[in-house]
Image 1 (cartoon, rainbow, N blue to C red):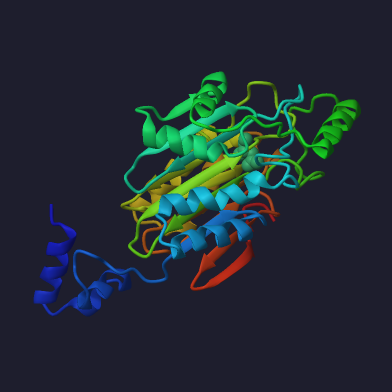
Image 2 (tube, rainbow, N blue to C red; image 1 turned 30 degrees about the vertical axis):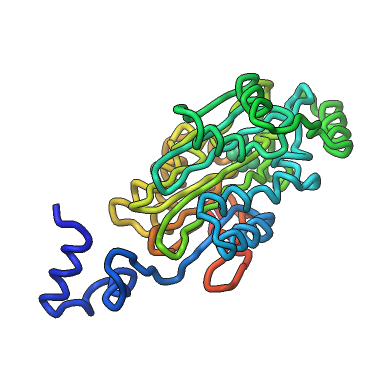
Length: 332
Ligand code: ASP
């Protein structure tokens, strides 16, 4: 197989460097072993809270942190925000009143860590990172994940804020358990997972995804966010993707892995996320009731976003700008 260096040398010898894509051509004047990519770094993340998370992630890179540090510390912001009702502290509880957390992280070396059904820990993403960095496993769940966190210095905290508790009590009184939330009537209540993807100036890619999951879910329910390949996937040769919304639809189609594989096969990030949403439309009969959103980035720093229903937005930090963008949707 022809490697990257040989490929570039062959092109240079043939006087054909101008035919190369920009991100490769930029290596022409630099050391071939340390490629320089255009439009990098890039940080992209889901929903309004992505703006602050992106800012934090970029600061980590500016201070010399790694891309894994950046994605982890970026999502610390919504995890610690008591006003955010879908992530960490303040997250809406399950139907029994317990806040249960799911999180996953992947780095450029292909390593992955996740936790699911974890309670009482403000930063599940950091427990997921510790699973990745210090154990031979990928996922720890429930009591075992909590024990692992406590043994490693994490503090047990009550994450159910008074306002989320009141909301849960009223909700249960009004509707009882609602297994099929009506996204049209309550568009911003239940689906604010943060998925955050980053590519550093060397083209190294990482991603993090963290959530308290679907509000008022059945006790024990785990969504897509901690499932590697569903809620998050990173391949350092290609790019990364993450998802938000009704996790069951993403799990049934292994959405984030699908997006990355489509990019591997030549799709742009935008084409890839659109095809992943189309897959859900084709394969999941009752998909119209639910929201799903994907974001993606490739190694060259190109991005994409797409969702089922109108209403999903994402934050993009690129070329020193951090902006909120409304995603295009399958249904208008
Ligand atoms: N994807 C998450 C889940 O199903 C929900 C969300 O995006 O907030 O648990």
